[in-house]
Image 1: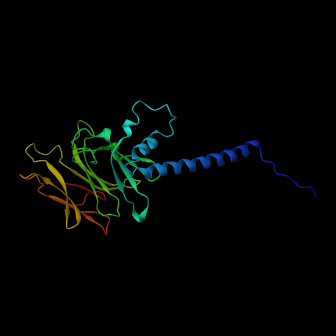
Image 2: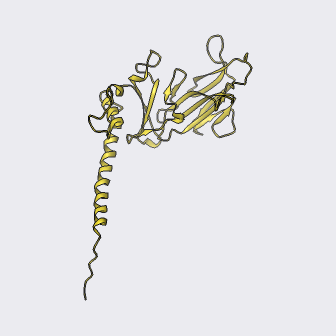
Image 3: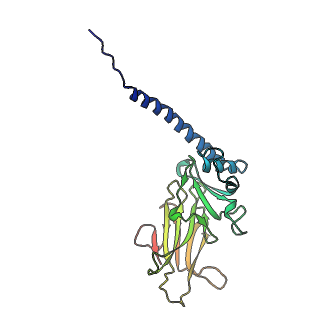
Length: 246
């Protein structure tokens, strides 16, 4: 009985070898980035780690002038993840602040969100700049921090604009947890514009909206309170989940 030998075409063998080699390289590449991401938590290593994360795989010598200076870190907010998963890092660079309101050591200015594998997370609305109206909110020590931002929105010159209070949870998906529209441009000119404030009421985070009082605090007309059991803000409801129009 004649034995039949199965012969693989050269192209198939080449494909298998390339897959093994590239697969191993991809695993090594991922591990390298994860190590750099972890180094963002250490003030002694975070500048070099951010430079490596943002420049790799650019070849040495191909970087734009001043690239290292642009990777000097001002502040890092470490966001825990549910179930003890590796954290997300919110990185604020020194080049991103211009006054005492935004630095040093204050989470203001340009923010870069990086997950535990070293991937840069696209920011919502590309509004990756936290101002003095923004806030980093901690609802619990073992839960993701939240980023509150105020965004003026107008679809076109003919549309009435509104102000959005937008809160996202600092997770790999930047999950939205609250969206509130207020201060419509169609309001009468004499209408007092609303503002916002974040308070800790008996250990519970509360977002308040309303006109400002004489002492500079907000006279609350709408309140949104964090519910740990429901994992969301409760308050006036809107047309969509986690949304409101006041």
